[in-house]
Amino acid sequence: MIREKLEEFYSFVFEKELLDEIEQVGVYKKLRENELLVDLGDQMKGVPLLLDGAIKIVREDKKGEEILLYFLERGDTCASSFASAISNGKCGIRAIAEKESEIIFLPKEKLDDWLVKYKSWRNFVIDSYNIRLNEMMETIDTLAFMKMDERLYKYLTDKAQILRETTLKTTHQDIAYDMHTSRVVISRLLKQLENEGKIKLNRNRIEILQF
Amino acid sequence: MIREKLEEFYSFVFEKELLDEIEQVGVYKKLRENELLVDLGDQMKGVPLLLDGAIKIVREDKKGEEILLYFLERGDTCASSFASAISNGKCGIRAIAEKESEIIFLPKEKLDDWLVKYKSWRNFVIDSYNIRLNEMMETIDTLAFMKMDERLYKYLTDKAQILRETTLKTTHQDIAYDMHTSRVVISRLLKQLENEGKIKLNRNRIEILQF
DNA sequence: AATTCACTGTAACCAATGTTACAAAACTCT
DNA sequence: AGAGTTTTGTAACATTGGTTACAGTGAATT
Figure (spheres, chains in turn purple, brown, cyan, red):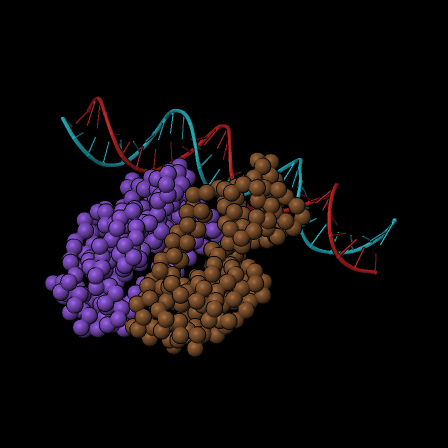
């Protein structure tokens, strides 16, 4: 069962021997929607490999103010926890399942061994870091260069793509938390997007008409 | 000469054998103030190891709008170019010497070999990525959670620390470029900081009184 | 000393975002 | 159906940041 999923998303990424090892030492875990995977300040005992689903990565500052960093999809891993696992440091983010998800936990003891043994693992780790750095840069671009209405539209379309649905089940308040603004602002801009014909609003539900 | 500098900052980081290799294949380069080290879209043929000085890393979007990401100090390397070098991809940033700096260029052919051969190199690479990820998160925090006046004060004090000087030689316009805002806004807020007794303003010169 | 140029100060105005307050609508639970 | 709860819509207002315009100031050059 685990092997199937592993083959499906990772057979072109990892060598056969590494897949075998992962199957042996990896711990499979299923996450419910909204289940907390990593919290701020956690010390990771391993890294999660995402088999299926979607994970939301959120940053929080001292005052408890939140902002969405990015989403993880299947095939992704959490670079931030890799860091934390290998160096026994703390994790600066929070990870929450956006929908039911499946992961494999890889114990931290193996991470360095595999860097030596498997070229495919080195590539995977480096690639993961790069993808994450680029994702962060995109977040910075969004914050630095875009206005709220653009950011909101991007948020909606990005989230729809990650979840593979054109209708989002969410409230204005939840969006406001992710974007670190107030509910009233979101309601105002959503209404504006609706008037432009880009979305259709309903209670607890936003339908995206244009991508 | 190179060996001395290498020993000074990297003897506690790298194994002796690796230092030897670096000395053999590394290319030493001196950068003038404001010299361009990496430009947007560059394909890196190696990674720079910073021996001394300070490098400013800037992000630019399609419309040519800029924003400062962070500074590199001695002992740092540019994670973004590591990515680019190993995967032959393009670099999403621009790197400019903030003051006279010295670097060693490591050819990309060695990067993967060293990951296999040297534990210290693996640690260094992973650490570098982590430091960069954390730096990016701090940038995101700054953009998402702080107002302009706070951001400006942080910019001034951060820059002073990197350059190891309490007086910055800069113009309001230059600060405005780094922070992606307008000169008038910066002048207004600088005056405010001066009135609060935190800084002292002069033509082409800002003295920081409180840290 | 007079001229020129880059840099700084400031006012007045505008646009975007954030806040407060309240009403209406939609759903839940008895 | 009625009461309570959550979500949404909207107005009015405050604050922050961005823009335009222009004057002043200091340094450099002729």
